[in-house]
Length: 98
Image (cartoon, rainbow, N blue to C red):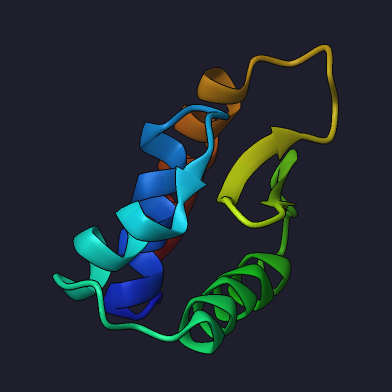
């Protein structure tokens, strides 16, 4: 199970389908305000990456750092469509949780 903040970040990255999620957008959406240190954001991304790596079947994408801007999901297999794999992966995770 993801923490609420990790879940919020994961949803933001999925909803943006490969586009950059800015640090500013993360502050507003996850914490509800602008006063959040860069270290807190970095720590949250690190926790989410760790949770994703602990899954029995690794996802076909990774969280990419966009320096000075934010993060985005990128496909490890360029031939695949990120939204398609995200949808399949979310269904798989939901099946495990049930």
